[in-house]
Image (cartoon, rainbow, N blue to C red; front, side):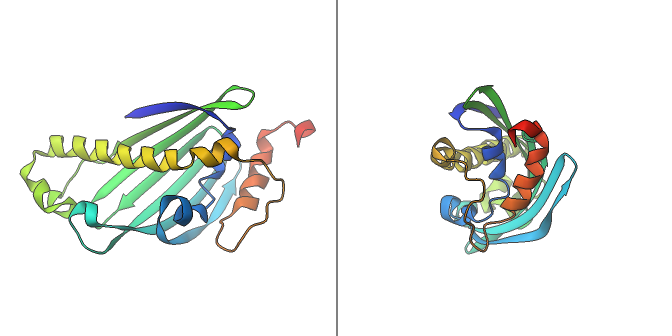
Length: 192
């Protein structure tokens, strides 16, 4: 399942979002956001792992559920985000593809693939009533709906953000300086 938008932005800005851990609470409403592993930059690949809590009421449960994220960024144009929610048996791979289309515009394409639902009762008490292929299709559609909402929550920021070489950062903002140092390798030296 895929969708695209044309936005005034740059691939470096949309990709930086994956390491801007501090914005997850304020923009997306995630709680208890934690970096689970230090960001690792190896040649053209940047890796980061974090987790956060979300309200579980959408799944017929009380309290919060923990969401684990593993991000692999391949250059500035391709990211794979593995999402797992063990409490409900949800696993997805989310794809982020920002492609320049003119000087200040990108085409942002996102996609999602999910692991077929194995234990429907973990997902929702009524989910056991549906055949697994239908349930998996519903879960993929709802997963994409949530993913789309999260991406669209960032549109105003991306389209109005001004690049600041050394931005003032607060504790918990994430490894933005490490990301920017890593991103320099994708530019011709005369533009750095």
